[in-house]
Image 1 (cartoon, each protein chain N blue to C red):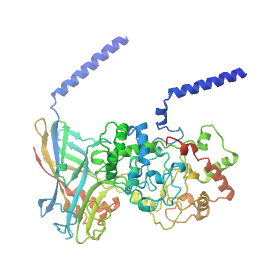
Image 2 (image 1 turned 60 degrees about the vertical axis):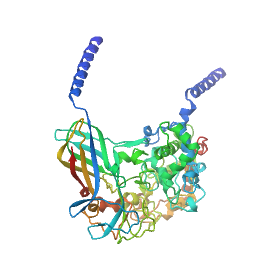
Image 3 (image 1 turned 60 degrees about the horizontal axis):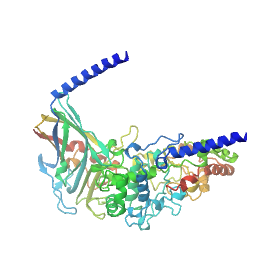
Image 4 (image 1 turned 180 degrees about the horizontal axis):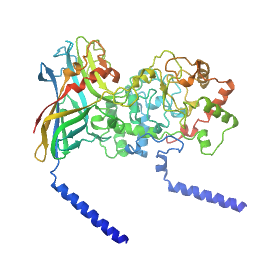
Length: 340
Length: 285
């Protein structure tokens, strides 16, 4: 019996080491992989194949404050890795000249599987997401053309671009945007406890299981699928009068007034503050909003209006269990991945 | 058996290929055609060359349909998806190709650089052409390919909307003494300029069943004579764009309101004037 175990153990060892030899770490680390229970990859990856050089250039740009007007704000100022690329410090986030914006910095994770970006969905391709932040006068406040000029003048960048994109001699904006996109594309969060359970490597506790059941019954209509979002724009009853028109700005459709993108709940326990304007600091406040704070308006999500009863009925005990389930969506490997 | 089958197939394919080759050799070589977009002001039926003024100039050299004086600092627009057709079934489509390294098939006509108004189409099959179709603006095939170089480079084209990602189709900037003011987002005027008239007309999302505002225009024009494309011939098709019709077409544009246009829905009245502003003028064979 012991011999059999030994043989199996040796076999596993052998097999594991073989696998490591076969997969060169370079290709496996910098390859965009879709877990089979995730949505399809939305990004046209053949237009911008990810390489280690391109990814690392994108990472460097993401962390370089020289992309902003006064060289003070990098992408990573408001998208901090340790909290799933959100902003834990400021509410709302702070841009150049200490200006505050009006919207909450959203999580950057699983971007490869999405096709509409920003709270109002105004950007429809990942390449263009960074243009918004760079040029927004309250965020990085810089002209894209001037950023490109700065990069050409910073001694280390031209050769880094040449390594990532051998066909170019001068840095131009599309290559900069593609490099940043390569970085964001690989920011895949698929290693939370929830994912390990999906893969059969772990199991929920009884309370987490009960939390999941409450979640499926009361939350999963909108926070659906493997990304815990339905890809739609909805009004979740934060206001009756809207200071931010939300989706209506893009769609020009009155019925979209006050609607915002349903956010992913992956890593939600890390991504405080909550809502498009960051008005709630704790997950308990969010739960209380859905239980007792939903305000009426014409565009209110039908899921939050049960024959005139606004909100979602929740007991304290249900809220506790929901939070225990939400904790299984925290991906510690994602926020500590050394290559990100 | 297999060998026999292969031999038959081989012979068959060879004959087919040779015969195809024969047909090709009888065809004339493809040629070149130039399409020129000339921006004009049509005053009392007379075409006048457009004149741009220095931003901020108090020299108002044009008048709109409501009798309001104005001048022009900037006029720039995209032409894409050009298609030529002929009386004998000739068809040439100028394919749009969008890459980080450059853009083909999407042209940016800028009044401040007249050479941009001449679009040279190469490899046009020999034949006669008497109809042109093109889109004013950049369609989904230029936006959803992602970051692009050349005419679509968002850092250099000055036509990209970062908040509603896509390209302005027609960008007009100028001044009018009756302007209601407001020049946010101007390329040529200071933000505190009180006389600005800015028409950034765009909106490419064309989705059935939604209210997205689509402001690109696809237009077709017949030529009065045939343009003959063949080796040694380089016909030149002359199109005109009348700026006055942009403000004095199916809709009268009033500079005392909605004169700081930066989103699709606000650009609709001027966008509806775009088809009438373009016209075929003449051909040099």
